[in-house]
Structure formats: C-alpha cells, structure tokens
Length: 640
Figure 1: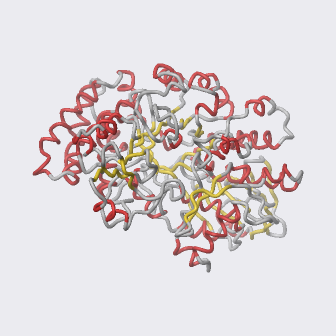
Figure 2 (figure 1 turned 90 degrees about the vertical axis):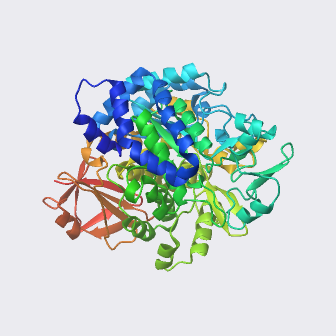
C-alpha cells in the first residue's frame, strides 16, 4: 500500500484513534504484502522462524521512535504527498566543506532561507575510516555521528530547528556495503562464521572467478576487480566498489533484519528522506552483472513497506544511476507499483542536458524524454544538473543510433569535450575512472567550470563569461521547471569553480570527484551585493527562479508535463499543463534561434501577438510571426 492509499485509509478512520492503534492498523494493512515480499526472497519452508523474528521486531522498532516523530508521521499521511509540492527546493552539501560542522551549518540556515532552499541533502555524517573512505560512503556506523561534524545531540538539535522552519533533511543509508572497520567486518576478520556469512566470503577463487566473468568494474583505475583477499581471514570478500567496502550478503535474511534496525535508528534522528545508496547492486547472482536484478527491487520494496509500518512519514530516494528504462522501475512495477521508492534521481535528464550543451542540439534529449515510460502518479524525481558524484553518460544506445551517431564514438566526443581534450571547448573538467578495456569514462568538474566560466575568467574573455552565466542560469531554469524536486549542489548558486586542492591530499588525489566538492566561499557570499560579478548574477537569477517556482502551483508534480517538437533542433520545449499552464523554451545554441509562433498560438500562450515571460516579467512580441531566443536564453511563458 503506497502513501496515497494509506492516507485515504487513515482519513476514513476515527479522529480519536491513538498513535499506537494507527501503528497496529498500518501493520495489519501491510502485513500480507510484507509476508509475500519476504518469502519471495527467503523461501517459507526454510525461514518461517526468521519471519516471526521480523514480526516481533516491528513493535520494538516502533516503540523506539520518538513520540513527536510518531505524530509527525500521522500528520504527513493525512496531508498527502508533501514531497510533490512546488514549494520544495533542495541543496546538496558536505557539512564540513559548507561550514565546518553541524553547528556551523545550523548557524547558516538563514542563507538557505534567503535563497529559498527548504530541503537539505547532507552527505554522510556517520563514523568512517580515517584514511580513504569514499567520502563517508564506507561506514563504520549507521547512526553515530563522526566527531569531525559534532555529536548526535548536535544533529538532533539541527533537525528540530529544521522542522520548526518547515525545512526537510535527507541523509544517506549505505545499504549495499559497510566499511572493513564495521563491527560485523571486524568479527568476520576475527573468524566469526556468523558474520562472515553477512558478507560474500570465499575460501578460494572458484566462486569469485565465476562472478568476475560478468561483473563490471565500478572503479577500474583505483579498485580493479570485485574481490579482495583478506589475509587475517584467509578468505576472499566481495568488494564491488573499493577494497575497504564490503558488500552485504542479502541472501542471508539476518542481514535484512539487522539493516532494517539500522535504518530505523537513523530515521529516528529526525530524517525526512532516506537516500538508498547503490540499491541497484543489492542482490548478487553469478552469470549476471548483479545490477537491477528482480530481487533488488523486491528487497527495496520490503524495506519500504516495513518502514511504512514503523515510520511512514519518512520516504525513500532511489540512488540508481542506471539506464533510463531501468530508473523508472525503482518506483515499483506491477504488484509493487508505487511501493518501492517515492523519489528517484532523474539521472537521464542530467546526462542528456550535458549532452545537449556539448552538441548544441536537443534531439537526443527530446527523443529520450518522450520515450520514457510515465512514472507512478505518487512518485517524483530529483532533478539536478550535477551532484557530489561524477557525471555518467547514461544515454540509450538505440536512441544514439537513431540520431545517426555511433554510441562509442559519441561518448568519446562528450568525454573529450568536457575533459580538456578539445582546444576549442570552453569546458574545464577531468576524466574519472576511464576504462581502456571498454572506452567508458565519466566526467568531473563544478558546473561553472564545465560550462566555461573558469576558462572565460582565465582568458579574460567577457563573451565566454557571459555565455557561461547564461548556460548556468538556463540549466537551473530547466530543473526548476521540470516535474519533480530541483536539487542544487551547494556552491553552484554562486558559480563556484573547480577545487584543485584535492591533488595535494594523499587520501583524495586519486579521486577526481573531489574537484567538484569545493569549500563554500563565504567571502563571495559576503560580497554578493556587488551585482556585476558572475557569482552575483548567478545567485540572484537562481533566487528569482526559486521564488517563481514556489509561486506557481503548476510546478507541483502531478505528471502534468508534455514535450513539444518545434522542428528546431536547438530549442528544447516542454509544458507544465494546467488551466494556467507554463511553457518552457530553451535555446542550446551559441547563436540566436527562431521558431514559428503559430503552434504556440494553438497552445493558448499568445494574446494580441504578445507572450508573457514570467522570468523577466515582460511581454514579448512576435517578429514577423517568429519568436526569437538569444543564445542560452530560457523563457517561462505563462498562458493568458
């Protein structure tokens, strides 16, 4: 039962039912589905006793939840799908790189309020190895705050303040793996057979070699292969990401039970959204890539339905950076439709936007978007132009072929364009995890540097600088208007350039993603009133876009998006449909482009030969029946 159905059920019940009674109602309502999901992974003839342990665990987990959060759960269910609101705008950040620690972040909440941000994705905060730790994604704990950020008390105080300010917080739940310093791993290393079975461990290479025949390499440059030999244990352990990140063995149901407890402990700190990290990898099977397997979807749904019983006010985000047709499946399919994750990353949109910047064409973007299956009505996207991670090239080969391009050569061109292998390109990015065996690679760099601002400043080229500013504002204008939650990486709102300091850090220098994880420049923020700088132009343009988004209910996600083909391969057009709809037009070319105004007239956006652009709050007149767009210009045309 998804949130909307549960909301309808609760609305039909008596107002005076206690929180405990409502918990029992949720458990009874979802129990059949939970049972079916559990036994589809763990055969009933072998695991009846384990399922009984799960049933007993529900009450214990529910009773551990603070009373104010129990009440918040019920209040949110009654309000419906709060996460689909047009008033939600997010920012992603590393706490220490933003402002030292949790107290420092607490002191800067007014900065987000000024900008209009009310949803924060904080990168991993829990304890991790002191050396290499994949930016905190090698976890030593799931709910203990690392001392570098402060204490658990500091975090709970932050979440209390955020609730008072009607702001939301998202944290990662590293569901696929732990660090090799996690308590289970330490016990496994010490020879404890129970905990060795919490991971994929093998006495020889027979099984690992079978896995390796079809497993891709995630980090081929720094961590080739998928298994690591642990001398103290005298066994091989599966490590698909880095050798210090041990993959959890979810074929063992005890792992699920313990991870469910870890999940609830985390959400009980006041977390509103849980980002399920690397969930595409959750189930492993010899002879497959061990990504996007049906069992991974069932397991995700099982986590979701259990959480809905215990803490239904908390929702899940799917961190599945996979092919477009695979991403949509993490909302749930068939009998699980709407019962996996409420939110997923719109990684396809992100990759395709960067493709359109490099090619100056929107054909592949348009073709891919119109062919993506419609998501369930109670789900939504996270839309972003970049994150803390690399930019992958997750584009459909079939559509690339249809554009008349060779997929491998096209991806090579995109990498060359952004990673400084073409002299004429304005982009200044770096190559990440290039695999010479396959020719695959990814891109790193801050948005401003990838869009030409760094090169423009270096060359003192005002045209290049202005073009970069327009690109930054256009891309943000697209994600603000698209269906879903816009998420801005902290620093992009002030056009922060690449940070090359990671090259001097022995624990980071091999990971070029740190180039796009800069420290927040508070000196720049202090000087934003000098509005002639690139930083100010970006900040105030973005602030205006956020305010306009929140002002227009058409931007709420009701699956009300249509894509239009103007016949001009440089201009992206999509519409947020409603009685007072908004038509978005964007020019990806370096030169001025025109489109015929007749088809816009038929959509109802023209009155007396005039359009109204709500970004500039100006009326725009047709020129001989044509609408003109300057390079990298974006319009939000409002229906009269």
